Image 1 (cartoon, rainbow, N blue to C red):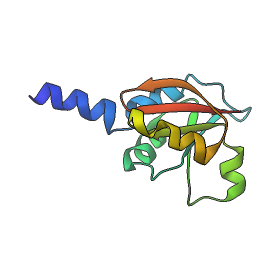
Image 2: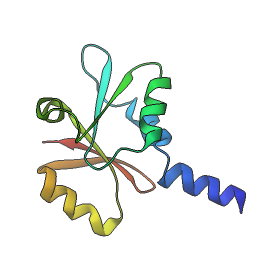
Image 3: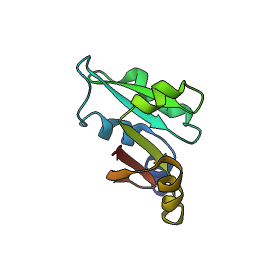
Length: 109
């Protein structure tokens, strides 16, 4: 039961695996990758983003400025399949580029 719970938490709750996957995304010239969490970002996103080496990950949420949000090329959300249409309605044109458990990374445009 412990092994099953650990796998469930790492794929569906913790942001560690999705942030590790985000390291392989194309990043800006300053060596950072920007991820926008449109819904409340998990605490683990801030924790793990601070522990990653290169590229470093910048976590943006709805509490950040509109300019910061609009400049961030990647959107990350933990969604059930039935909730995916909602993010397209709220954010606009997105392309899903990676999925780990319920976590999804989208590229804008």
